[in-house]
Length: 229
Image 1 (cartoon, rainbow, N blue to C red):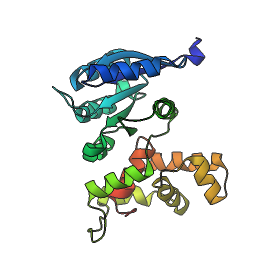
Image 2: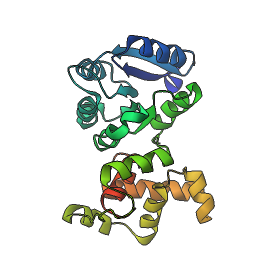
Image 3: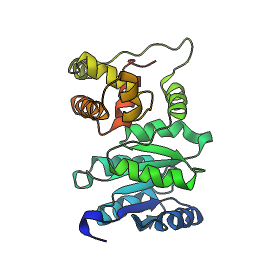
Image 4: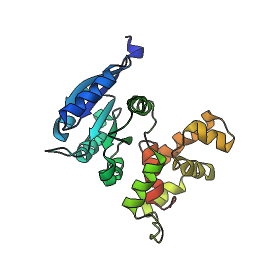
C-alpha cells in the first residue's frame, strides 16, 4: 500500500482480551485498516499511543491502573498526538461516563454491541475530521449528566464561554444548533438549502472560534452553555 493510501492505524484499549481479539479480527479484515497495538489498561494505552502514534484509539472506559477517561484526556492533550482521535467504547447501562469522555477530548463514543460495519465506518469517519455521535443517545447522555429534562435549571455560559459565543456570526450560531442534532453536513445542507461545501466551511469556522477539537466538542459546548436545552 502506497504512502498516499496507507492503512488507518488503530490502537485497541480494553481490559477484556477476548473483546480486543474480536475487534481486531473485524478491523484487520479491512484492507484500509490495521491494528498496530493493544493495551489492557489506560496506562499501557497511553504508552502505546505515544510509541505508535496511531490514527485512532478505541478506548474502553473501565480499566485497571488508569481508566479510559484519564487516558483519553492525556492523549488528547499531548501535542505529539494531535492527529490521534479517540473513540470511547461504553456499555449503555453505564454511559454516564460518556459525556466526561467527550469533555476529555474523545471524538465520539460507541456502544460495545456496535455492529461491525458501524464500527468500521466510525473509525473512517473520525480520521477525516468527523465525529461519532448518535443523536438520541447523545441527548440522553447530556440530559442525564447536565441535568436536562422538564424543570431542569437552565445553564448560562460563563465569561469565557460567552466571549467564544460572541465570536460567532448569526449563521455560525445557527450551524452550531444544527450540529447539536447530530446530522451530517449533507443533511444540514439539504435542510438549509445550501451546498455541503458551504456547511463544511461554516463548521470549520465554528470549531476554530469555539476552540474545540471536533463536532462532538461543539455539541458539548452548546449544551453546557444552555444554547441547546
